[in-house]
Length: 324
Image 1: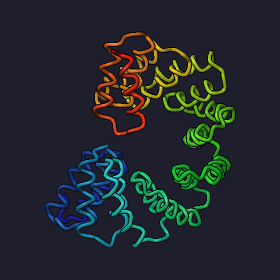
Image 2: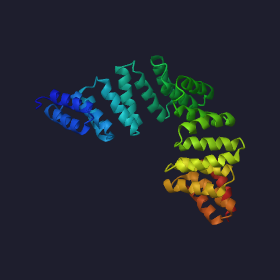
Image 3: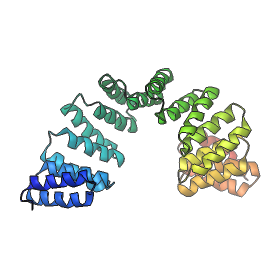
Image 4: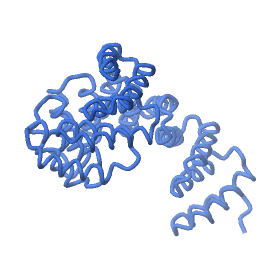
């Protein structure tokens, strides 16, 4: 029978080794009842909640850990990770900043800080973080891939490509880099080269709808409509409830002249996200091409009321006149 917080913690660690996580939590709860300021107990509790995929309670535990042990980088690191997974990037940024101050040689912390900065559009600052991480972990494919993503976001395609190629050189099995590299090539108009890279992405990630969509788009741009049609059908099979993806699938169908399927894709996007103005724009175009003026007018009116792109709104206003 345990009589101290440390004994309960040790019992919990033994149970964790046996993958008895619920029982471990029970021991850790007893530890913090005896010693509420035990950062070690709170830290272990956060790790167990992470294992149980209970993100909310994990964050709560790591918050307690950082409260009672503010100089312990592991607590801040795990708290930052939990917040990052929740999409709370601004708060996660503060956590990772503390980690790199406490432990400046922690490459993973620099990479995570770069990621949350990227997610906030702070791409140049993110690159600076990756440049801190890479000398510490020169073989880290995540650092190289993320650095490429940041450079691509800033429009530096040549340097981004070098990063992606370095990541592939380091680990040809790091699947996500093929999608990132393929997206870069398509954005640069290198569609034939993009097709080859994106074929690799779809082979490695058959459930990744964006890879299939990008491949179909590249094929359509290289005048391979039959192949593109087959590929975009695969994208539709795995798109699920992603409004952005359905909208882009609609754009590929439009490129291929499949206006019926394009309309269905835009409507699917709007069903998922009713205020999706770009999908409404696609619907308006489809209805006009089908001669359904009333439906086209409604879609145009929605776009004109809710969209912010003044240049496109001027074009849609002309479409609206065709609906009279």
